[in-house]
Image 1 (cartoon, rainbow, N blue to C red):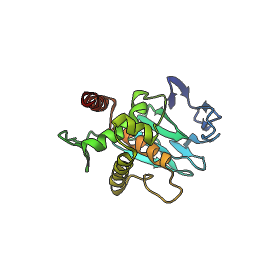
Image 2 (cartoon, helix red, strand yellow):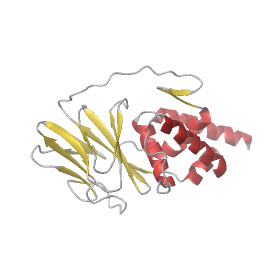
Image 3 (cartoon, rainbow, N blue to C red):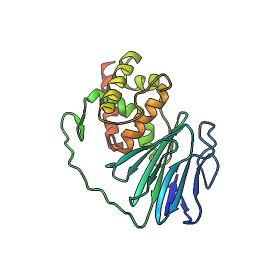
Image 4 (cartoon, one colour):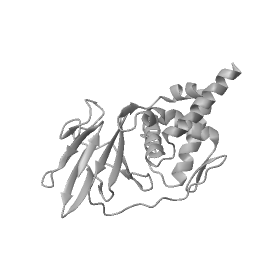
Length: 232
């Protein structure tokens, strides 16, 4: 089993836990929002496990094709059963991505049929063009920096990117989060402790991990920018 982060590869020892965090075998970043000890990878009776040993942060875990996705909350663990597993997590304003690669996968995923038309369709979820633009405006830095680190834009910055006022942006963000929440995506709605930055980060993690949007879709943002310039 190996871990790749920002182009650097780490070999895992079956006998010892592999620690990921501000300190450990993989020192992600000197980010005060990141736990000193956040994730561990361990082997138990022949099965590799990803464990969240932090107290606040969660991670989005997906197979290489984005067909299977899980939200790894504090105290939870998941078996690593795919040949390549992508892990995204956000600490403060920064999103990180790493890949876990195994030589003996337990499961393989099949490719679902996707429909492309006037709207974006991923499984049962359909988004309007403006909703897709909103997701792209938030996910753009992560999509451009796949496999590295990126900062998620504030709502005000993303709204300016689209030429919207903040009221319109927040209304559409509510609509997108509600739509995904109804489809079972966790972390997009909550009580008073559900901070806005956490909601944006969770949306970006889910959208990137599940291939809801890809780097190729960023052309929609550029087309929108050209249209705004033409109207000026």
